[in-house]
Image 1: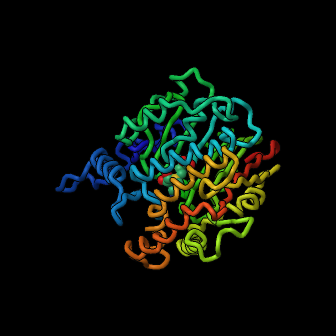
Image 2 (image 1 turned 30 degrees about the horizontal axis):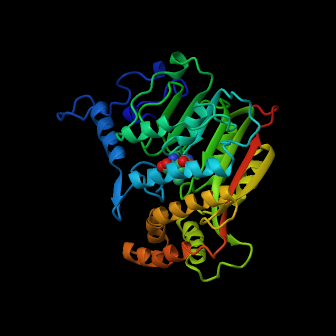
Image 3 (image 1 turned 90 degrees about the vertical axis):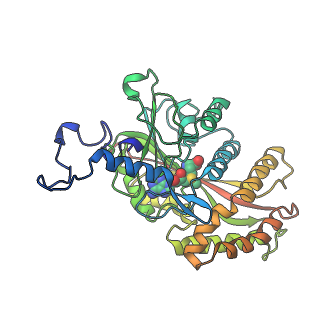
Length: 377
Ligand SMILES: C[S@@+](CC[C@H](N)C(=O)[O-])C[C@H]1O[C@@H](n2cnc3c(N)ncnc32)[C@H](O)[C@@H]1O
């Protein structure tokens, strides 16, 4: 749903408008002495609550969604995920997607789109790395700080562009001005989807961290909504810390953080280790030709190779600036830690993180699979 029409079902993909008679859902008993709030005013209230979010530990969290999302949705976090987009593009050598989709898939859905960086790159047909994410997109995001998305013009009617791309998120953190064939919606992807079944060429999701309670259900919904012959592709950083040369001590701050975060996320119901199961989830749902690719993501600029060194510098920045965001709600929900307890724990993590003698890395896991051509709902 677009934030400004939360009470109204989405366009062509949901119920046809004529099936809903005006007044069917006004909630009034017809003869109440009191003026019931109108749908418009209820929608307005809901919109502003969603846009405002919820404050905790000095951060802003999503106000919408059936279950809690563990990361904040404020400016600092949005800057972090934009920076991560640039890092992942370097890691995947400019590719957004590894599935062998055609150069011009017609309909793409990005789950948990965040600031919509990935989906806006898809709009630029930047699927196989041929095009660059241009500066103006970042510029557009930073000047349009009012993030509530207004109703986009109907992409099918307004655009001569081939792809129709949809980004969905529980938080209205997307820019207002995007190409007409790009549309953002507010919805909880753990709920029942209202898009037409078998209508997407590609369903894509990246870094759904501390977000999803039931991965098999989500992957099943992907299967139902991808066209036969279409693809699903999931990307995620696996925050288990690896080190091939024993240079990172077991008790280093970053190792300790990795173990604690994996434990806490599982206790919260959103395990950060879920990405190692993506391949088996896709296979169980019925996808074929399922391929898993793992990339080494250095935790700091310790590698000699200039490309990996730069990626490591991005990751160091990501961790130094993002550790609180990643930890506050997760450690509070899992262990009952206060903000102060979490920040004290993070002091040693930050210190050890900067030690370039520690050759540690994470894995970035990418899994894609195809829905069989023969599959029909
Ligand atoms: C870490 S961010 C990643 C954003 C984006 N995919 C990227 O890679 O830049 C995770 C996103 O998932 C969204 N999210 C979390 N739970 C969700 C849910 N149940 N339904 C829809 N979006 C969700 C969050 O609001 C956030 O924008």
